[in-house]
Length: 363
Image (cartoon, rainbow, N blue to C red; front, side, top):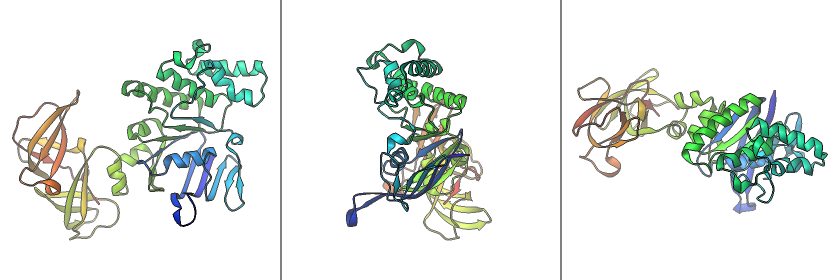
């Protein structure tokens, strides 16, 4: 069953000739028990979409429905206020009251709903226990760590059992190590409680780890949507391929085409690739080849489907070395640069960089 339905949503900032379109016909569904991540670059519309669902932005047209209840309908001139949408919202800044205890922060929404104090205390105790905060109810926000403050914000969003929880960059205020731990905790919590969640993030690793489905936005439209695995392994467009993962990009020309494969001419030699995206014809001068950094194989001897480049530098990443290969004969935009991972630091010299046909995508 669909918990949230957005249909052909348009939203502009400004009016008249100076109107700036932010959402350009976005449609999406959030099923019960599903986690959907809104991913995209700055200015793509992901936060605006979340705020429109929350009732904090007024769309121009389209519709928003939560369960069987219409929240916005441009054609009917219907717009339900944010406070009546019964959604749980976790802000990027957490927005905790500094002068209220953890328990008071979590129960504040219930107090506004005029629930009696004994029921509020019971609900607050239950949700704090679910998030491992039961012993911190009497503390104030400044007495908590960043991770604990984040859990309090989540508890406040969950305390009145909303049908959908909205998460706006929920982990961005945490340091890198704590973010990894919080990411696992958040995913486990969502699954355990059977929540339906819509999450905005700019971090693709976070989106892939937490969500069941990713909606990638580009300039106010959905570029592609699917499971994290499908988005990473089978991108439909060049934008999706480049946004997901760490990539090498090579200007290319299509010399021959054979079904779903092609022979490409790139600087350093000819290589076979898999065609993706719109149809590419032989002789296209503006083709682009994309390959994930982890898919490039380094060899000291000649191998199939490879180009030869000199090593420029190696950078130690802890579990591996990131090696940069650069054509020193060219400069600027004409310089071929390839990155690859190695288990050990490489000695200076030239290497063959194998680009497996199925992992090298032509757009």
